[in-house]
Image 1 (tube, rainbow, N blue to C red):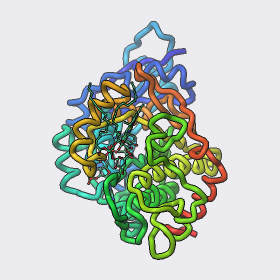
Image 2 (cartoon, rainbow, N blue to C red; image 1 turned 45 degrees about the vertical axis):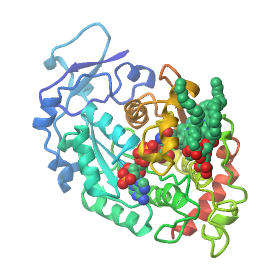
Image 3 (cartoon, helix red, strand yellow; image 1 turned 180 degrees about the horizontal axis):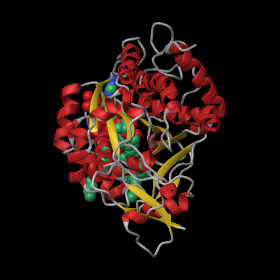
Length: 401
Ligand code: LMG
Ligand code: NDP
Ligand code: PMR
């Protein structure tokens, strides 16, 4: 049995049909339906989302019926029991003020079925970025989050909860990359900045927001942590020095600063590029540990991904100008690993809302035809023992244990 968008009522929000296999849902998908955007803009009252009454009130809905593929029934024919109504999906994206995060927010907004919380450290920049990207006001909210401060992470969680909005998807996307730094810099709590921001800030955020995700009544709840090929030493890209390596995590145990031991997880000398790649290994290990601990109990889908080499994003803002000039053509014409921000945003948006990507514990990648597939992680990035150790040390560092 196939699903069809049988009736699109004027004030529509979203479609969903529960209890269908991924295979059948795939045919329609969240992206497969044309949404009358102007209706959404005009008629969706986003203050409904904010209100405490949110869960009680029924938002305007589009209906979809399960039926055989050939007939297109009139709206009135829809049997009440076959109707499913759904509010907008509330998606928190960290670092949505540029690059992948912004492109994802835009792609999700364009479905007309999501409201994005842009969790950003620079409020004005995020507002401007959303405006420039053409994201309609009713499809996003900017909230302050500085992942380089655990206090800010806790404050963000508090602000979000006070907004009264449910949480359906969390996307841990923000990152910093400091390839030419000679000396380490630190987060507010004194952790080396790359691992402190990319891993520890997100670790605390994910742990705290897990409770909110559990409470969501949305049909699919997801927690996504952006990974990367460069953290995976089973690839060519992952073998460009310096290579990721967490070692026995002695530097992390010491608190990632050179007062106690070392700013590097493995206890070695500071290297900004390695710290970034190590942080990506942490992101991928954390996703798997979350999956092992919580997937069965909560039904939440945990996923990571490599969206492709988005060679023109702000991630390379700290690299030497020559690198920033040569890197995009190198990736386009030599490695052929290049993707545009727009394409990468669509990929991450799939992991957020495509009904066919609900498998948990997966590291998604895309092939040359832009089809998603489950990719293999390197030995270290899939080491369950290391994931557990990382989890336990991280929870001590962020004050959860
Ligand atoms: C280092 O900087 C930092 O010092 C280090 O701390 C760490 O951060 C590291 O992993 C990150 O980066 C990078 C440094 C050396 O780069 C520079 O400082 C200068 C920029 C060099 C540009 C690097 C990009 C590669 C450009 C290749 C040429 C591109 C031409 C493109 C045009 C295409 C048009 C059609 O960075 C390096 O590690 C680069 C090493 C130097 C390589 C130079 C030769 C490259 C040849 C490319 C082919 C490689 C082979 C591979 C595969 C494919 C086959 C077909
Ligand atoms: P960008 O630099 O464009 O985006 C990073 C975002 O993170 C920015 O919005 C930035 O905010 C935000 N950010 C940085 N530090 C903090 C902080 N302390 N608190 C809150 N937000 C912060 O890079 P990309 O879009 O490329 O990176 C996004 C993700 O994609 C990262 O996880 C990266 O590892 C991953 N990735 C990127 C690839 C690529 O080729 N570019 C490839 C594979 C993975 P602000 O705008 O204020 O600076
Ligand atoms: Mg890499 C063969 C494929 C390939 C891919 C997909 C990437 C992705 N890179 C590849 C190959 C190579 N790179 C080769 C052969 C070289 C030597 C010339 C090379 C170099 C290189 C540098 C110097 N690449 C880099 C850098 C960076 O500074 C970037 C980095 O490591 O950031 C941590 C980077 C990247 N290459 C990629 C991707 C996706 C990056 C960005 C890193 C990330 O977002 O995780």
